[in-house]
Amino acid sequence: MRRIRKRWRTFAGGLSGLACGAVGGIVAVALLAGGASGGARDAGDSIITAGHLPPLLTVRGEQLTLRYAIVCPPPGGDPTSGEPCDGAGDVYIRAGRSGPFERLPLVRGGDSAAGRYFANVPADIASAPGGFSYYAVLRDRASGAGLTVPAGGATAPQQSYPLRAAVRVELGTHVFGTRRRADARVVDAPWGNGAGEAGLSGGKTSIRIGPSSFDVMPGGTIAVLDEVNDRVQRWRGGAHVATVPVDVPAATNDMGIGADGSIYVLDGRGSAGSTPLIRTFAPDGTLTRARHIADRTWSQLRIGPRGPIVHQEPSDQWMPATDGATPLDRAAQVRAGTAGLPFGDGSHLVLLRSGAAEVRVARIVDGAVRTSWRVVSRTPLGEVQLAEPTGNRVVLVVKAYTDTQDEFQVLVLDGKGLVEQFSVASDQWAAAAPLAHFRFAGSSLYKLGSSLAGVFVDRYDLRGER
Picture 1: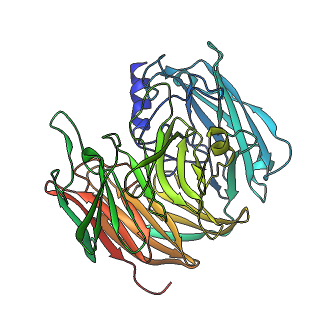
Picture 2: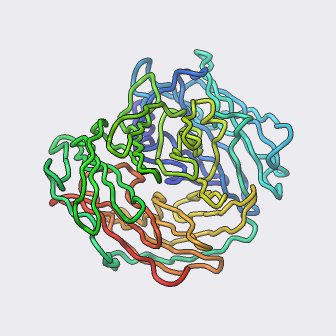
Picture 3: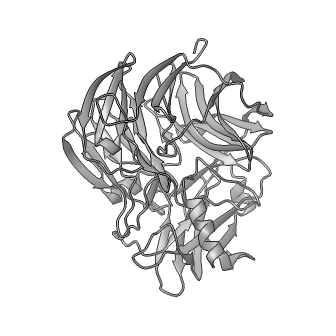
């Protein structure tokens, strides 16, 4: 059991549906994502947790198997640890987006002693022209504790979309060390606690934590979450221009800045018995609201067309925290869960890392795939840091890695294939939120990095017309 517990913790330390996965007959598990953790206790939740990576994007001929890991955290303990439950459950699945669900009992596989259970997707549903939707009801036989994944159940089931005419992008073997120079360094802050400096915690015996997130405000002002010093600092044109005090935990939080200047900070400090908090601050740093997100943990925060939106686990869905100025409670968040990140034009971007070296991307419009890509590499691909539309293109940032080195690949895709490609260093000397290293604004990509000297943000201007 000791080995099983270690595996759970390893998966829990910073992965999400954007970060890992496989489809077909390969085990697909994405457990608790990076950032906070906490066991939800309201709205009928109970003390079990689960891991599942949904086959969000499928290709013709794949044999689809839905796999779940069911784990029982210790009472009152760390919900990212625990032993496999004596589990059971059912998957409720249907072709398309409406109509009745078919019940598929979960089967104990050869690895069920490790908390793993599965259900094969029937061929007629797997091949449905409009894809399929499903949810699972899981339970621990010993205690009777249960969990619905995703949390919205039949109201907001997980969605899977077929890729019928995906543009294939062959990256070949990644050549490390051929990085593009930044067009500008827009933030350069040495370690310290003075104005224009960045706080650092940790040391030889604990993880170093520096500024954990940043965002690009309208007009190009860069806001950096300096949580060790309880503040948000701002730079414009490479110069430090403002310091805003905020009361946040010194942890790997994520942050987004609204169009009105409101500051949203997602809590990176977990606690047993509660879900993470999203804190809302006025532009001057005054705390205006603190509200729990719906699920036990999160992987990233973004600003959507109606306010902050959080990718949550174990549902593996994007859930809005507000509807404009109106905060959403847990029930409203889970009802609005979607597989893809929504954008202002009404489209959603859905992503799946398939196997060790493929990333699938689909732009969903009116519930159907409008454009899609299969990015394939001969070098393993890690987490997807960013995927955003720009005009008729998509900007994708994904990590390429080997056992000894890694870099981020920046790809600009259009309906014909690869428009632009370059690499940047994965220079994180101090820890930040796992999926908060990049932001895209206007026609530029911004990257948060750190070194022995301090923290910085570099700007990369994308080439060509959109």
